[in-house]
Image 1 (tube, rainbow, N blue to C red):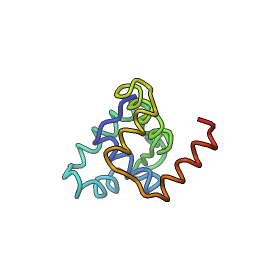
Image 2: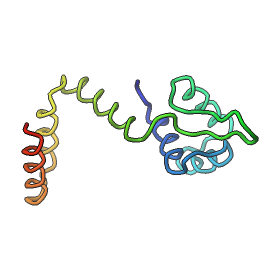
Image 3: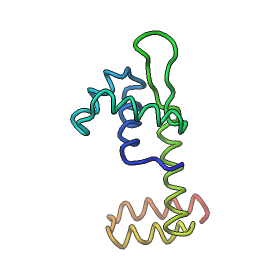
Length: 120
């Protein structure tokens, strides 16, 4: 499932807060997006249809929360990116990142240790 940049913003606010009302979420997103209450509600309804948001049916005002954990969404995004851009070749992805932005000796040793532990 593809998550758009704006959907990541909404999810981020929901993960940070553990859930929110429409008013709270609108306020939290206002500075970054300038969205009105109606725009936020439209996003929430679309995201519910995609299985990204759960809308509480109890009480008023209704509460909204992320349907998936941040870790699950990040894992799916990484998997999609790796498959689409690097044809599933994780080594090529890591090599590309390291060529563009070298890491310190300490980080390089940590990476070696991690790879050894994974028996890659």
